[in-house]
Length: 164
Image 1 (tube, rainbow, N blue to C red):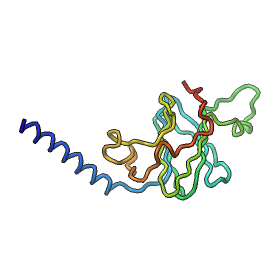
Image 2: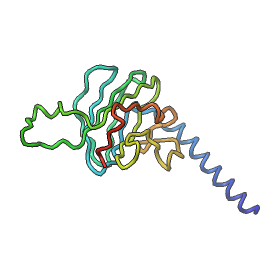
Image 3: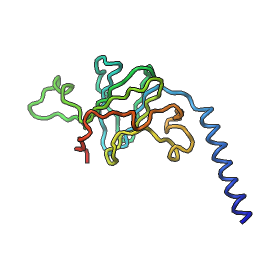
Image 4: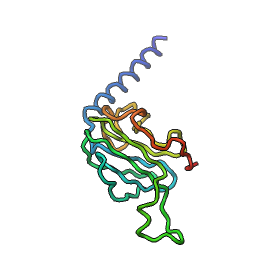
């Protein structure tokens, strides 16, 4: 019984030690990052503070995209299935295809590190990081101590689940 307590206390001490060190050493980061865990690449557009959507960005499967943003600014994130040239659609029309997923994230002062995984519900959720968040950092090494919560991701099309 004593050995079990000693082992358990040792494990807890090690985890707490590494957790405190990773939070201290983790940089604040760029403010926005999306990690694509989908089996296919996705395309995204970001609108900051109600302005115009930026250029379309392709995020490969298993890839990440980060962008410096003002943490006080609300963002709208549009996610598209892989865009492919279809008969009858001209190249200049591709940016006007409606998003497959659209959401608002309005959390002043919070980082917006999210993961896209259409195999889960919800498909877009806050990053949990290494070891299910135990170390307090994202896979990119950014601190998750000031990250958004699931309730901060306001989907504009919650009935959408065409990705499965």
